Image (cartoon, rainbow, N blue to C red; front, top):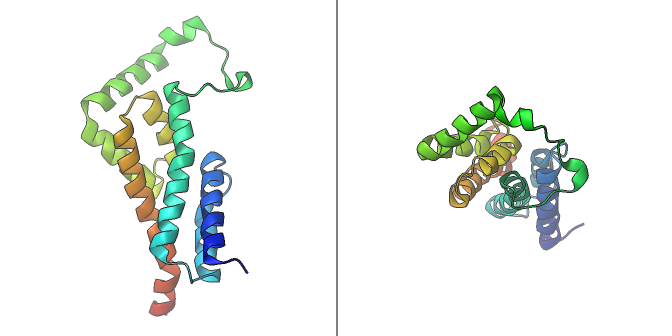
Length: 163
């Protein structure tokens, strides 16, 4: 059986991996860990998983911002005509809206981080592309993700007490 430090380390690793590869569900892992190993405090588990998730999602944020150079096979074939179409105009208007309406941007990021609606991975990419300030991204992401994982870590105990 893993020690508390081992469980926390495993939770951190899983949260980073699931942030990078969304096919892996860290939510199922958190609930399973709480059910299997209740000796880890819920707040510590939520904090560690939150930090791992935001750390992983920062890679998407920075890649969309252009601060991280992606391998060549991940680059789209650039078409000059593509950069002047309606889609590009819509994206430019969206970027401007994010800059002009920081409260709206923060609320969307917070809801996405907490409820994954819209999917948090997508909002991480859009936030980087729209050049949302790093502080806004971090604060909303940390608060939202902590809320999400704290609720998941507490839920099994609440359900047992309620039944």
